Image 1 (cartoon, rainbow, N blue to C red):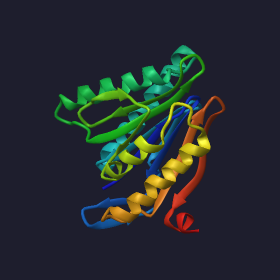
Image 2: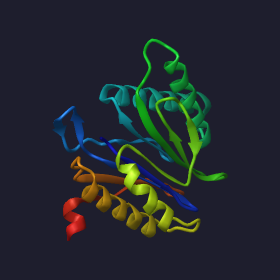
Image 3: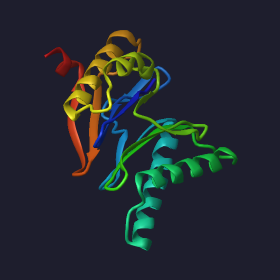
Image 4: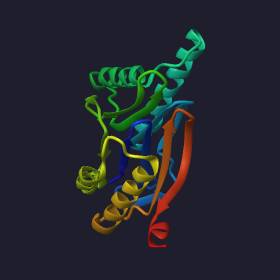
Length: 201
């Protein structure tokens, strides 16, 4: 029922995630942050089983931080995505697999922005735009219509607003609020959340 959205531009990656934490037919809370800052140039957004998302995201984050402490420099977004995928694949073949769907998004001064789609089977693919969850079904056609290689941050934010408006209109589950974050050459920062109230204004 949860939704993640991601867009890569020529010099940035932008992520959006709903803030609803639900189990079965019960909504537990509506202020869950699903976009995690891993380093000054790396974001991970995660949905799936609530315990798995928290534990696996923290495991990846702490190991990437440990790598920097040992070596004196950060893993690139490309390397971070492969590290994440490798660990997810290894756990998939153990008695304790993680049921997580995620985006690894980052900016490398040499290679530029990177957005990697990873699912619970440890399939990993670099993409220009994608989504996880039921909301992604409604976002796909909007991405196809409005994404272009030179998309700006303002345009990407407007695309997210279009996607979220469609999700809130069509999806039977009520996902009222979405957090938005961007990573670029200036680092990671949060943008104005998108909510049903802000879209109606």
